[in-house]
Image 1 (cartoon, one colour):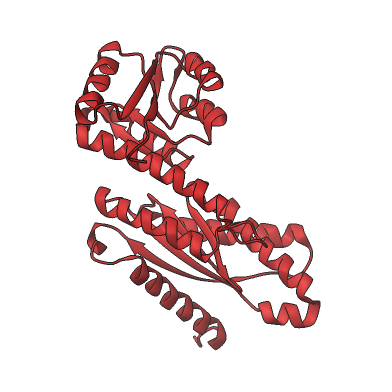
Image 2 (cartoon, rainbow, N blue to C red; image 1 turned 180 degrees about the horizontal axis):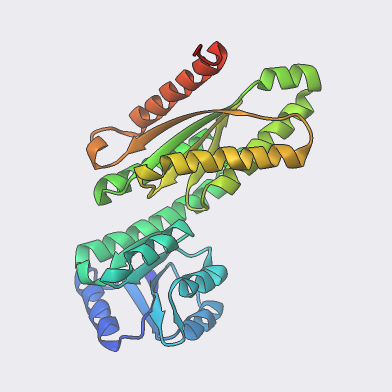
Length: 299
């Protein structure tokens, strides 16, 4: 990457800001970045049809589009290109919504410095290249289409480093399909494979496209929820079980159930790494299974 020119599409209606950004990039890394400036969303959509870009810097307030729709319309045409959202100080929630929907990162203009800007673009390009490499290396689970163990560990480690740098919270979910051996023995392996695919469908519907969802092997699944406030844990658990129940009712076949463990990462857990986070989620999963085996407690 260091040898290549990074082609940046800046979608921003402020001429002074565009001029300043071009000057900064030339000072920080001469001949490293090629900046193309569009003032309107319509111009950017046309430009995307004509040229290839490595990263997009997108202001959410443009003359012909404002708010989340600005991101969603651009993302519809450029999901294959990493997008970094730029927003005003009072629009952080809007920027986070864009990140949850697929943006790689966000920058607040009033808080932005040169290092933060360059790091955000570098990370966006690197993560995009990493995802492309994962596709080329077939680091996906063949049965479910989710990430496999190797793919998950590669991307999750990157997300942990970003979380440590930016103090963003993460939640790691471990889920086991209950009774897979019994399903295989009583109904055949084809039904067992279908049950695993149904779990994958439930996880995709429950979590966001920006979260990392994987089948680690056998009946084991995991999800790394990105930028997930710890206060949302119960809501996310409830949504998972609600989606699972809805799928069971609609399927009409063998009902599936999941055991669940969750580990949390935030500024208070800054000293732990991905291995420790996975160990904590696995321990909670084990405890959930133990509770199910012991049955309901006596009143």
